[in-house]
Amino acid sequence: MSKTISIIVPCFNEQESVPLFYAAVEKVAAQLPDHAIEYLFINDGSADQTLPAMRTLQAQDPEHVHYISFSRNFGKEAALYAGLQAATGDYVAVMDVDLQDPPALLPEMIQGIEVEGYDCVGTRRTTRAGEPPVRSFFAKKFYQIINHISQTKIVDGARDYRLMTRQMVDAILEMTEYNRFSKGIFSWVGFDTKYLEYQNQDRVAGTTSWSFWGLFKYSLDGIVTFSETPLAIASFIGFFSFIIASIALIFIIIRAIIFGDPTSGWPSLISVVLMIGGLQLLCLGIVGKYIGKIYLEVKNRPVYIVKEKK
Image (cartoon, rainbow, N blue to C red; front, side, top):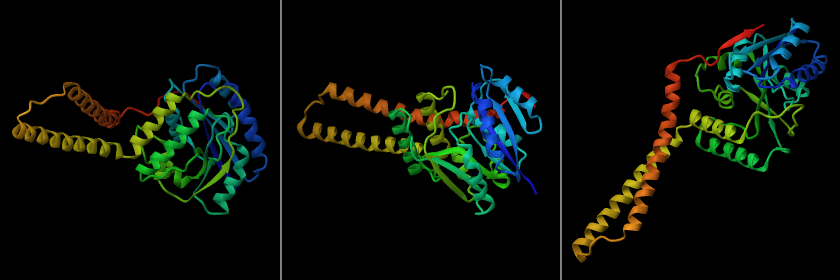
C-alpha cells in the first residue's frame, strides 16, 4: 500500500526558490514509486511574489500541492507548527525551500524508518562552509551551552530537516505552547532518532532572511524555553554578592572599632556600588525574560493567523 509523505516548506520572501524546490523534489519523488508526496508550502507573510508562485504550483498540481498563507509574518516556528497541523501524510518531513536541505536524502530517510525501524531520521551538517566565521563560532558555542545547561540534548549542527512518523508528529502537536523552539521540541518528545550527515549546501536562489541578531535572539529563546539554569545563575549571583557584602561590612566595623580609622576610598566604593547594581540589573533581566515568556503564554493568543489556504 502506498505511503504519503507530507513535506512542510516554510517560506519567507522565496519567490525564486519555490519552483526550483518543487522541481528538485519531483526528481527525487520519481525514485519513490511506493510513496506519494504532499507539498505544504507555508507563506510566512512574504512581501514579494512568493504567494503567487505557490498559487501557480497549486494550479499546476492541485492533487499534491497545497499552501497556507499567513496574515503577516509570524516566524518560522509558527510556519512549522501550521504545517504540522495541516499535514495528513503517514510520514512528515520538514525542509527549507532554499534547497540547503538536500532532497536526495529522502530515500535514505525513508529506509531509516521503514527498514531500520526509527521513528525519526534527522540531518546534521558536518561543515559550515560559506558561513561567516563569527556566525559559525557562536553557533557552535550555542550548542555547547544549551547541552550543558539543559536536560534536553540537541545534536550539534542538527537541522530542522527530518522525516518523522505520524506517531511522533502527533506527540509534537500535543505541545501547544506559544513560545516554540522546534529543535528542542523534536528532542524533548523522544522517539528513536537517527541522524544523517552532510556537508553544507549553498542556497539555490535569493538571500537568507536570518541576521546575526535574529539568530542570537532565537538562541536565547531556545535557552530560556528549555533550561532554568539562567534563573539559578541569577540566584547564585545574588547570594554570592550578599556574602561578599556581609564580609566586607564586618571587616569595616571591626577595623573601625580596633583602629578608629574612618572609612575611606570613595572611588572604590562607588565602583563596587555600580558593579553590584549592574549584577542586580542583569539578574532582573534574566528573570524578566522568563516573566515575558509567561506573559505571552497566559494571553493564549493564536500561534498564527491564516489569511488564505488551498
